[in-house]
Image (cartoon, rainbow, N blue to C red; front, side):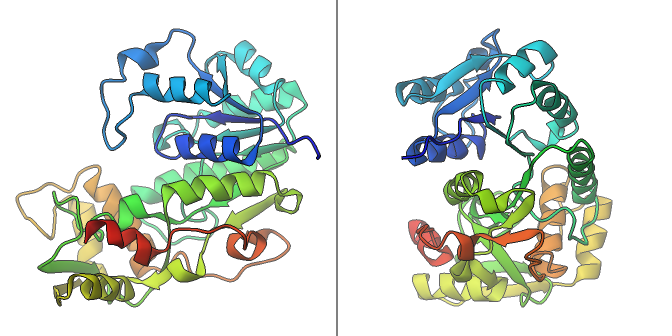
Length: 328
């Protein structure tokens, strides 16, 4: 058997990064993660959020599974270069506040000179194909700038476009309020509900990332995760949910003009007493991008794009229908 590429994951304890690590381990790739040498992750690990494991526990699980822990820091060029020299593929899953810091990763990759491929932190809509508004637009602009720097420096790359994670969009059917499960009485739908969106679980996003990392045909291309069973309109998703609970929801459709106004004035159209500041305004802008503007609807260009469902048909992914079963 051919020796698989060594993969380094940055942002390995995040909501996406952890799934990329596990997918890499499962695929048999020698897997590395970068952690700060001051072990500050231990001190902040009491914040569990949506992930029950602390960062300390997660890193220990990584170690137990054979993942190699490299001590270093994205702000320490010397240790970053040292880390790059140990691997073949670098995957960054840093959060939106660290997007611009990827120039430091690019500089380290450039100096190391041995990295075969870099996956910048994207894992959302295609930042070169969108009609989004702020505050999402400004993040997409930052990500696009990183793409241009990568290309200008001649660094081999793959861009992973996963579109909409189920944890953000379907956990509560994109309702901007305090509910954490799909509603059973009333539902608010942005636009007319007839625009196609692309949905994927965070676990499957990790799987497709590693599939792309091990795929030589994905070199210098964008991989688009638009899974046939998950390429749905919001009306179709609501219909799936209604069938599961045996009930018809009361629907309120919000026109684009109102959504844009709500994003701009930072007010919630659902509960006037609730401010739509971050993350509500950011989520509203994300929902607007996919559910109203249709930013997941475009043609694939074989010269620069790869459709994941066609290139990796062997992957058994979780469908939207299956995902919703957990809430019934």
